[in-house]
Length: 428
Image (cartoon, rainbow, N blue to C red; front, side):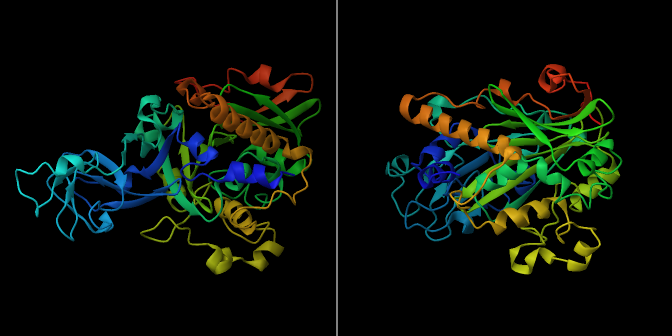
């Protein structure tokens, strides 16, 4: 259980909140690059950490992210004209560049210095891989750009999607580091989903419903090891890395691409889920990409033109009770991503953690909360830079492996759990 004040501390991320200040020490996904596909294209609304912003790509191809509202009368710049290296408000013609600097106020004399004193709040927006990343913190403390492996392999080897989840970021993240639910919630699809089937690990997941957890602290977060019985004298280990504040990876299966997520708060009751698939040593096949676009694996099928899943709380996630009875979908909800989202959203916008009763398989979740709280306090009280800011902390991999009973999982997989360019993931 968590006391109410600790639950609030960990879940509230708006400006001025302790957790919000912690998030503002990291580069965060703001959009997919596909959302700003061309110069002088339509601006896009962005809400992140409860700040309402506007993103655009100017005539010269530069990306901008700034306050959504014109400094004159507060009109949303989503209505703006994107032209000649700036956004022009359609109300009275005020124009801004990608830094938020006002360039023109048509009603003012040309000799006036008025524009120089008008500047909207703005943040950097940088393309790394197929994501546009932003940093909302103090410019003097801006860290190096992200070095997660999935954004640095060749374009042919990676794919990223995103979806809107109607819950607080933390309960979504906690689902990402919880390996125990796989044996139940996802059991109906382990051997049928094209991005999961064909792995011995699926049999271990379904054959042992009582995993044992060991959690190892790392400089950037945690390695969460879930152990299940395998062949005589051996254990099957699923090792999930968590890099603060909200990067997780799913342990791999066979030669399938490696999955993972970054959970980004929109506000306290909604978050974006950026979902990636990549392979360290080979291009993704056409069939794999088609499956990802269709919402298989850990991706979702979204309403066309949006990033809201087709199956959502307004239609009860297209629940199919007959499929549930057949164990085609254990919960009656189709799709691994939506199976997770449906239950996490069912907790309410912010789950009341004072009522929960945790057990041994929740060790990873408990340790993650403790590490988040410790980092927030250290930042607030002493200005200590939180874990996960250093790009060295990003160079991690998930692992699935079968080991003898007497072998410690982290000692045996220390090399496997780090990025090794040109070397395939360690997988069962």
